[in-house]
Amino acid sequence: MLSHRNFDSTDILFSLVYLVIIFIIANFIRGFNIKKRPEYAYLFKAMGIKIFGSMAFAFVYLFYYGDGDTVYYFEGASTLTNYIYKDPFQYIRLLFSSTEFPYDLNHVHSEILFSNSGEEWFMVKIVSILNIVAFDRYFINSIIISMVSLWGSWRMFQGFLMFEPKYKNLTFWAVFGVPSVIFWGSGLLKDTITFAFLGVFFYHSMKVFFKYQFKAKSIFAITFSMFIIFNIKAYIILSFLPVLLIGWIVYNRKSIKSTFIRNIITPFLLISGIGAAVVIVPTIAQSSDKYKFENLESRLKGFHSWHSSLGGSSYDLHVTDYSVPSILAKIPASLNVTFYRPYVTEIRNAVSAIGALESLLFLVLSIIILIRLRLKLLVIIFDSPILIIALFYCIIFGFAVGFTSYNFGALARYKIPTMPFFAYLVLYLFNYYRIHRFDKAEERERSMERPAEIKQAKD
Image (cartoon, rainbow, N blue to C red; front, top):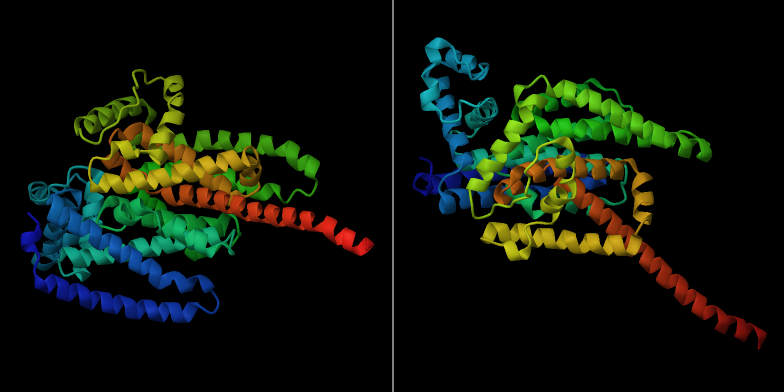
């Protein structure tokens, strides 16, 4: 079993060597790009955050918990990587195999714990490839994984900046500054890989569908990202596809010059987009037994039963009926638990305390936005395709993970794909309120000065 007993001074030494190499490469990338792309001024800060998150995650799971999925992924990858030295041809066969192993390699099932589920086995194979350059060391592998996360997060950062380039600082903290994403989206986990490739998918989708830059590189990146995510957590990409379509419709409505026609046709376009999504997403979902609609009820009941049995940090939405109307009625409660819970009264340990403080901050900011902007916030959101994308992804994905998780520990991991979008939405709207509040204050001051100026002019 991998634990603190396997950790020695050589891990620190090799990790430091890797970090020096990474920072040298990063310095070259930053210097090469910073003149044309000023956002690269944030690169070192972003890298530091990702490495910190990765090391914090590694130390918590090795020295505090001593167990967990991250351990099993690495141990499985380590076993698989050893086949390169035993028989490289057999490693290639394993790398391209499903969970239905070739007969002569069936013994691998007993050697690797995470080789029964397709998602877990796919992740083990990814980690085994990274393990080759990590020399079979957990901490080095964690650092490399954090750089994969940095790459995807950086692409997400740039994707947001395509629409609002002046808000670099706001966007940076939305993508890199959310504590739950720092911790759960930087270490050796499935969630880190899917989060990274969601960022790549998001960035290149923005280039292709919104900037109309149909380059082979972007087409390949979109296809490859979908392949990776679909094989690990398909619901992440299934949730994003309808959002992408709706955002594209809102973006293109601006090309209609007549305000009257644009306002009339927008509801029709949105309904058409949602209708198309309702057809497209189930069609893609049917390609996987796991996401077929006829299997969803049993899977939901299984999730609720399993996560509730974990105890401690579990929650209950009191679902007794799994019919469509009953499930839809739980949307508000599901969104609340995803973005605003655990409450500070539900803190059970140090990890949940971080999540509770994060949720409290978002709750306070959301209340201020709702009170100050009221219905105007809908006008602001529907005038911006990136805010539309953020809003609908938060609703669709936030509902999905909030409704299914039933455990705050699991939810903290499952929700990280949507957290940068939620943070961007909240910070953008709060920043809008803050700017216009100061503008109104200055206007009031000028209006108070005018009577004195008029009187002085008369004298």
